[in-house]
Image 1 (cartoon, helix red, strand yellow):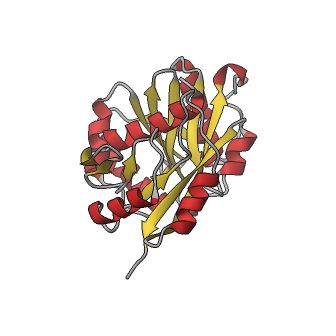
Image 2 (tube, rainbow, N blue to C red; image 1 turned 90 degrees about the vertical axis):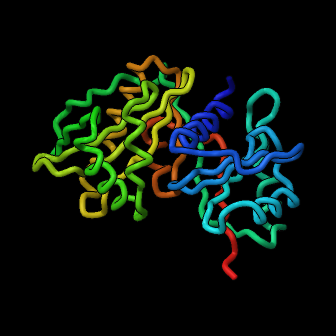
Amino acid sequence: MHIDRANLNNLTQLWQHYGSQLLYNDDQLRLNENISWPNRVWADMTTPVSISNLKQVVNTAPSTALFPLWPTITKDGSAATQAAVDALVHQSPDWQLAMQHTAMALELNKQQLINTHTTTRYPIHIKRLRDNSDIAAWVATGSKAFNYTIDVNVITPLLAREDTQILLAYNEHFQPVATGLLLKTDDVVGIHQIGVPAEYQGKGYATQMMHFLIQCAKKWQADYAVLQASKSGRPVYQKLGFVDQFLITYLQRYKS
């Protein structure tokens, strides 16, 4: 599977694991929606979205949902150019740009083994969650980091999944300071929900967490690690060796 298709497949599989249902389906458009958080409505990745499709989403999707657009995935699995997405956004009267993320990938067999135990001024201990005891701390830490409320009822069922790892980092004072989540699909591990609350930023916690997660992906025998980076996070991931693939453009409804 081409790494572009694999990245999107990993992301949409995560949304499905969060809890989803079929919202709409016809010959031109198939829509899935999250039952609750993170409130995404998304279309099949291989079918180009049109202006008429966007109107159908307006008529079908909850008004608070975010609708992601990505370049069409071609027959070989690679992403087409961004131009068609940009044109669609400019032409739509019902939608506005909410945010953009950059899909990125790291080829793990080219990634040097990183010593995650090197001396640092602000060391952390990273724990993989295996029961409900730390879920509340993970949800609270992630919610503060991302400035939105993560639904604990969405995260808790993931503990039982063999393809998912939920990780929480603690500082030297045993305070939870960083979150992470891994999802394995085929030979790819997706790195998700990397968050550090504002009061703990600037101490290198996110970088330490990323080093750890990359090594987890290698131990999981994945060929690639993939993620979707915000504008602020992209330079951090580039320093770790991740390369840009394509943009994911999130749309939100214009408020009347």
